[in-house]
Amino acid sequence: MSTGSLSSQSVPVFLAAQVMATDGANMGDPISFASELILDDVYELEYASEPARLSLVARDDASFFVGHDTSVGTPGAAIYLDCALTFMSPDGVTSDALLLVEVDTDGNVDGVYLLPFSALSSKVEYRLVGIDRDAAHSKFAQVACVSFTRGTHITLASGAQRAVEDLVVGDRVLTRDDGVQTLRWIGTSTTRAVGEFAPIRITSGTLNNDGDLLVSPDHRLFIYQRTDELGAGRSELLVKARHLVNGDTVTISEGGFVDYFQLLFDSHQIIYAEGIAAESMLIDSRTRPVLPSDLSDSLGKHVKGHSDLPHAGLDAPEGLLGPNAADLLKKASSR
Image (cartoon, rainbow, N blue to C red; front, top):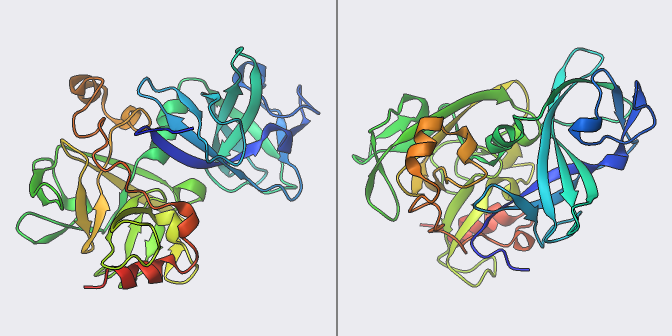
């Protein structure tokens, strides 16, 4: 199945059967959709359970289906973001998650998945303390948005470097493809740096970057290969930060809180962060919920320079990105 130019994302999920109620009204049952959940029920993760990657493809109407490169689910099947959940562990720490429901062609439930925003552990009792049927899309949008972290230096039109937190709407920023472009909107959020929200640290020099670069896990970096070291068959590549993690020069930076910043231009751009090329925010059905409602309404359903996915087809195949991918890409793009 081809997804064409539709937006896709791979997320870590647990199967419903791996998350069982061990106390409360639903004791003995796997986790289910919102209408069957009861607050204060206690859930535990099956021993030694590991999350699987579920490929989600977003249509323009904000609906989702399972992508062809998924590890679980049926490719092409409809997926609904049912609700946002909040759990509390015995030590008082809360964990957020999304409940996803897969439906077959007859409209019957064919699968239920839990997408946790932080790591869950077996043999821990998680009490269900929040069920929100309205927040699922906005919560997912926070994961889908590409974001820079506080302190990241962005290259302006003048060539000067400015910390992302000091940028303002109207600033003129240097882009790779369209020269100087005006910054139209800046989104900010602060979240715990755990799970899908933990930033990826690319240490100084790893990709010829001037300083450490910390970005959200699915933030894509633009690489121009002077030699095709990866065997991708093309010189221009977009590579997700999470696919470069090697435990050495590219690591997951967990712990504490992280300030994230989203930079929006009239069209999807490749800009320069810590001296290397990285994408700006892309407006699609996954990310639109983070925008203020008045801005979202003014943009209309299709946003030229975003909806037509100007950088489609540049994503590096994940199968080519092994533990030495960062070294290969640095070699391929050496100045």
